[in-house]
Length: 123
Image (cartoon, rainbow, N blue to C red):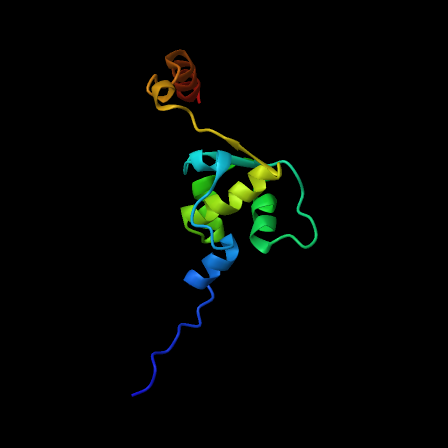
């Protein structure tokens, strides 16, 4: 009987371990990250940076949510949060909290919606 074959897929758990340096979760200010948190780059990638850090900085020239960033990079949330933690601590990115739930519950400005509706009806 032969030994079980190890998967050769570089996107497995070993890859995540290497990407995060063995860390399983973010620390510091990144521990409050949410999938709706917006991330924006505050610096350009430096030569020799980890590929994933470079990709985060490149993609976040304009604000991008953590969920969108994870989808683009094909990374699970906890792995991405560790990488973002590195960049936050270095001051290379800024994280903007999503709108708090108590503010979001107020709904849209009705006057603005009425103006938009009026404009659409005139078309």
